[in-house]
Image 1 (cartoon, rainbow, N blue to C red):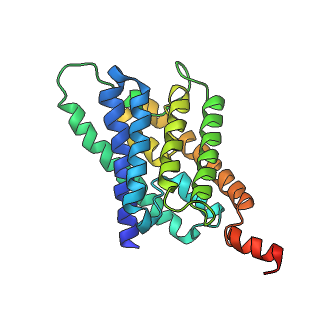
Image 2: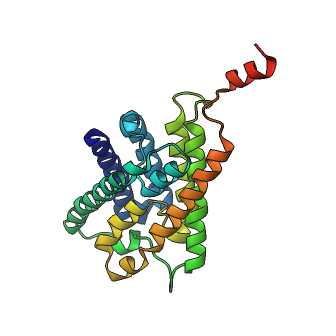
Image 3: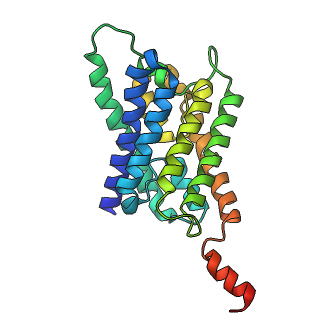
Length: 236
């Protein structure tokens, strides 16, 4: 377990580092696409690097969704979630220090990169719907891409590209959480407004993740590979 938790800490640290680095420093001049591709590439890389150790969740909503899908032990969920939240918070703290030494320029602050709703932003209902639906789709991709029936070795690519798509869609609406650890990390330094909105960025992604997990469990007949099903059908 310690190595698995360490892998989750490091993977979530990398994910939140990609959010903070790209959103604080690159996005003001290069746009939201830089954030989306930074996050997708970071998760793709870490899935290859430590996925064989911990399963590469890096996200409490993914952990809960995989429990719902029957892919992960419920008893291990809380330690995973703690490791993810701590890893994300440490990454945000590192970039808070970096931002404090930034020279005059066009940079974002932590409130600007936090997940919020309300006046000046999309309303609560639309934000919650976006977060829940996109997290559910993310879980369907994760479970399907890692199924025994899926092509071996390509799951991190599918997962990374899906996360890129999710951020391209959701950044204008909710700043794209789909990950309570990511939302918590930036809210710590985003001030009262970010903290007051944080609850929905736990509830909506976890609800979406659980829905996606159950849908995936229904869609995937994972224990029986296609070749075995063919043998059963032919009687060989």
